[in-house]
Length: 284
Image 1: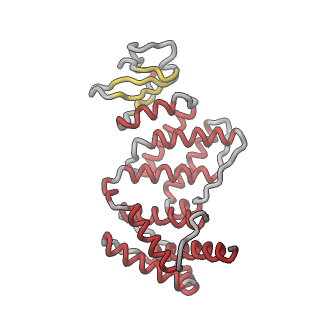
Image 2 (image 1 turned 30 degrees about the vertical axis):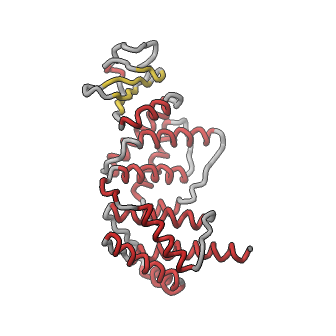
Image 3 (image 1 turned 90 degrees about the vertical axis):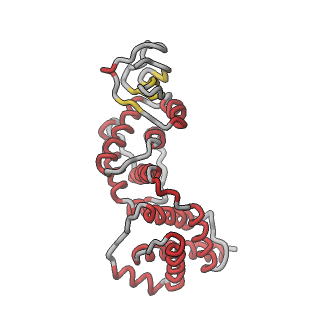
């Protein structure tokens, strides 16, 4: 392999046997080299074969990222693939590397970002969240004891969830359109516009996205907490009725039967967003 471009001392681009540009990583692999020089195979640690439209973006990204952060992101992605047993979109090398680098730099500056979706991610994507927690341990091991908050485990999990979805060819299900329709069902039920600036609304939309993603992946969420289900049905009858309307809509639209546990969590989110709407109206 010959060097096509030198990105930095540790990253170069080359061309594979099919004539496709690839990104090659290895400590010192580009040091004192020039275009056309042979790449030392002994120095190669990772070859990134990305979608053509993503290669330039990846090269721009890694040009200024510390080599250690690149290595760490690669190790986390490798661990995630092995642990989850799922295919991940190759764009995960862009999204997670970028996020991890900023998370580490923010922490060094004493800045922490709260993840408003921590509870939802823990609840609905426990496997991905567990990988995120392990990733925090890897950061601590490799970054001189740097401890990232658990919120970052949820951010990492969310990147993994999105990468899983990008590889699913059944993603032709019109998720954005269905979310819009479901929000209209909720608006009709609670009687008017929702507070789109509220945290409750943000959580609702994210929950709907996760809900529809699980449908696409043919995953069934079950909690087995019958007491909680009874309590929510009793105390939130209007919101539960709205969830039943959503169940019928989903059945009609794509033939999916929504479980009772899914209905309960839809009810909770509808209750939160309707409560936010009432509080806003009282303040006005």
